[in-house]
Image (spheres, helix red, strand yellow):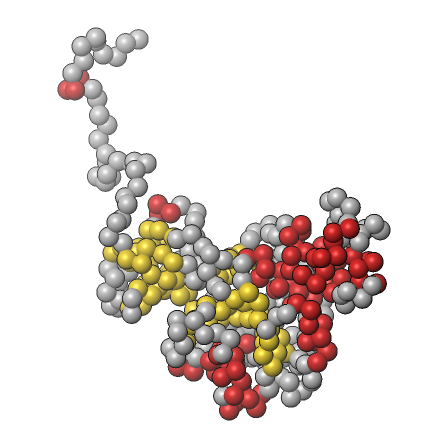
Length: 337
């Protein structure tokens, strides 16, 4: 049945009133050409602390961004009240493309990918040489995530007064990874912080480590004016530490050329469910050359894998091949010791 005649006029068309009194929905999004550029420093329950020029701004994510979330390190565009005054809030309307992404899952069976930090230049993997004992397989997993996400790795070994670093450094010698060895005394007198700072100049560095390895103590030494919550202790029974950092936080290193430290919560596992297994070999350059003789689509954990002959010939440490295959084959919920 025809509602209107052939020659309808605007007055003939029924328009339902908007009871809410707001503007009608539209797919056209504002361009916000006057938005200010900023950097996300931390995220807390939907509130994002951002740095805009020299001002710290509290912001919320605009609805128009949909499900796209902003994380620590993201470069964003903001509108609204950018004064930084108390009880004011701005709105994040754009998130720039990321140059690097550090991602992890809770475990290897968890499909939910967590972006830890964006746009970092390097990943400092903090490991204690004792109390708790070092966990090479956790280090390997962090290396995989670093290479996969576009971050350069840096090893920071703590508590050298309790155990020598030689054995652990030998395990990663073929990877040509820069490293810094520190002791408790050096952390207290500032010598360790000075040596670590040499590796951070002009870079955004994310710090990651197993609970209890002294990561937050190190960050406190690097940025004493921004001391985080007091450090925890290591459980004498389990050998595991207590989490003292509960959220990622970017801290400026004022004495360096644009250097930033991103302190992240301590981890007890580092899931790699989000990473394509075929890319994991790229985190082991000491083994990658040995895959040239592998059959097509080799899983690197089968009888015809050329890596066995490569390692037997002395080109790489057998422990490295064990670590690689453990990542590729088992992908257990917990890495173990």
